Length: 174
Image (cartoon, rainbow, N blue to C red; front, side, top):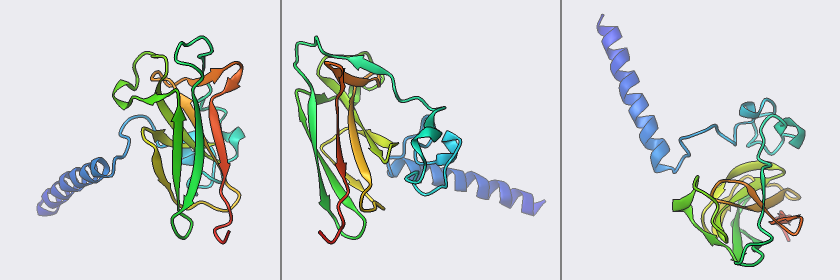
């Protein structure tokens, strides 16, 4: 009986510690883990970089919103990768005619506002609410793409073109 009590106590404190660790590391606590290929029905488990884009067919991030007529002008972005040692790179994003509004996420579309999504080799890694993001475990030749998205999560389009930018990870020796 004493063992059962100890097991319940360990489970209680272990769960609490795990929750605190997730919160302090800014883990997204809703939905599913986009870094987990098994949540998409395929993959090898390696930060989803190995997962072919066709494996994502059951998980649709493709809703579009045409913002061609918005009075704020054509939103745009540019990307730069800054080597941070080893296989890590700081991704720098510069926005034009677009304001990041993290407090408005999940709300209605407001012209010229929203957030970004980061993809590596076609797999969504995270939402982005700032100008800089550290990417780890990148390999030379990997494709990093950032899309602009409405508060309501649709990817923005302007004049028939997706509002996105792509950069290829260089050889770390260059």
